[in-house]
Length: 167
Image 1 (tube, rainbow, N blue to C red):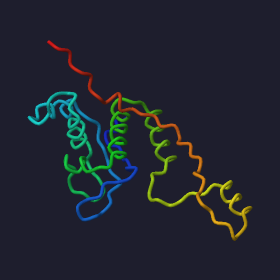
Image 2: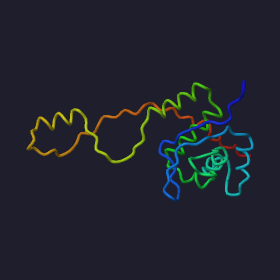
Image 3: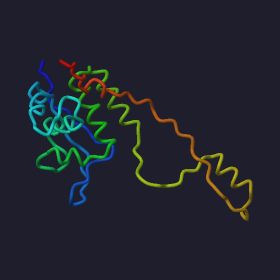
Image 4: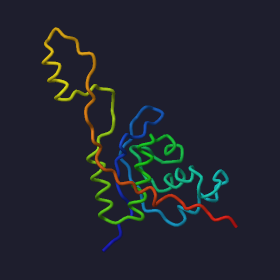
């Protein structure tokens, strides 16, 4: 039996580089103690509660992102918020979760569709009501589609550091 140390992921939105290329697929490896401790020595980090700590840790464990040759804190900082949240969840699951949590995260991602544009959505009720008004009447507004987001498990609480006690 061998230990799997690298996991593939697909970002919900994707990273757009300076040339406008979209990068969505990547790999993340399991974190080591050094991956979590070394960024604390960075002079720009003011402690375990510093939000930038997450960026530095993710930059260490994300091995590939699309066709990028190297993933640095700059690329992690350039991610959309949804992608950063996904990577935090993914980090928590592969490092601290179990197989069921890993599969649940992948299933939740597969079930969700990101917002991609501002296309108006019509419901069957809105279509029926506009047809009942007749072709000469003007539709003043579209009824918003009822949307129920799939339940999304969040694992970020497992990754975040606990505040240090005052000495």
